[in-house]
Image 1 (tube, rainbow, N blue to C red):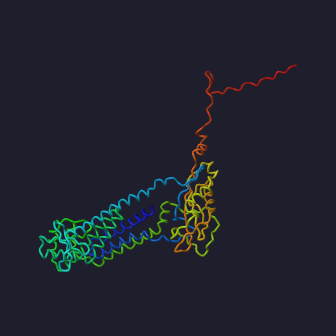
Image 2 (image 1 turned 120 degrees about the vertical axis):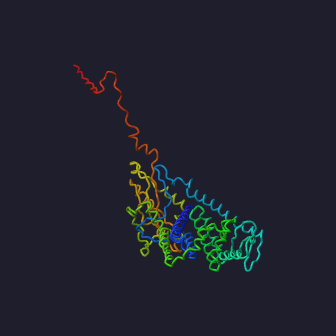
Image 3 (image 1 turned 30 degrees about the vertical axis):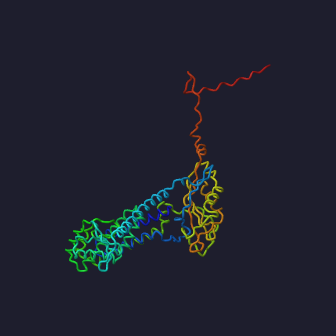
Length: 462
């Protein structure tokens, strides 16, 4: 489940950065088709880039970025997996996310259902070559796929034709399909505020394009602007559809009269290139970044010499592969092996040493262990004990990349913690100091020590 949360976070970061490029550098330009294409590509890129395979080989001498296995707790009297599995924050976040996604999916389906109910209620008629749904009431004109929803009442023939021409642009350019994509994005990323900005931006660009199409067809700009203002009071059916009287009337009028952006302005699109490359590098190299963030520099302490040259022709080490290596019998068997074979070093127990040892190792292409070392140690023999138990592991089932066995690296934390009895023994000189000398009797000088009584003289008998 933590994989889902990680995916949502990474795609959300990508959406945010790419939208920043659009908002600050592109949104004021009149390259409407270019901006439309940018928003669509930004969405698709952000949804796909976190799914890129993390198949980046790294030098076998560097253990950072490896998969972190579950923590093993080694107590002086008991060995167990790390506590806390009863409360998994990632699991809680996943459930909350799924609840929200279901709510917004139902909202989306209700909006679709509302449109089909209008089709069923009013029916579909033909006007020239267009499919028209003649509505009643104060609904604003809108389009949905190849259907135009409009109330012809109180509209002159010219105004009716102008509105239909506007909606025809939406239909011809397939804007409904794009709205479907952006609405589904709000279902997936409902918690992300930037997603709602994407949706608003694509609908705005759609209206710019439709306005441009009407004016290019010969409609008088001033008459068209007056028509927009007269239609601005219509009720919007829902937020999913392309509406003729979109709420951004002022911006649309400004764009109609704005000087066309120069070709040089289009070069600002290149600003998205380094952002996209940064995201690709960051997400595919996320294990490296995680290790750097934790300041876990690779410090190899007395690496094991065994199995160092199992595959001298291929030294590449993977952190994530198509099929991850498996301990014989699975992860439960691995924890059982560790619990049965690791011990709390007597030296560390007597010295009161406890803490977490981070150990790294490579599962070779033949399943054996190699490159065993310490990322972070605590001394007292704990580091050596952790390495000893890893060295003695049985042969694993190796990891597979594209069906071929490869070397795969892991990190594993082992927590050494003293029991209450050991801590009491370590501090007994402090907790149980020797009793003070008895109080002096009245009349005795407390500042002097009474001399010992003289030895008895031995009486000789004649």
